[in-house]
Image (tube, rainbow, N blue to C red; front, top):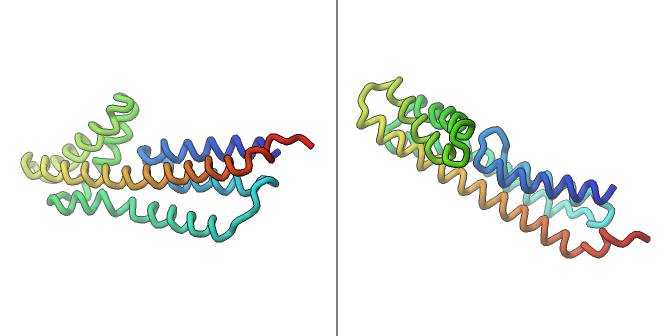
Length: 168
């Protein structure tokens, strides 16, 4: 059972890194689930302080993730349509353009969203840039947190690796 929890935990840790760029998966929270699964094994002792602090960090990042793209859009003069366009553009971009869609999709989506709201292409372009910067900032923050959580997972596993593979 410990090996299954270890494998599932590592999968969640990796999914958290991927989820840093996909709006459907909360990156740091998913990586944190990997840490939680690792602590449910009989090998790694339960550390509630560690799990509580890392959960707190994951939740804070998850909450501010909703504000950063909006702040970027507002800072550059955009509207709610630009923020919605960013998210829709990201999803469509990933589906049709793969990894390039992560970069191109939010920008184009924000631009189209702003053009729907206001027909001024200069203002729409400026707001799209702000939305894009906000998206990149929040994605970078989530990526760093998920990467750190995955690193912690590997570090904890490495410390107890001998116990995982001793079949007494």
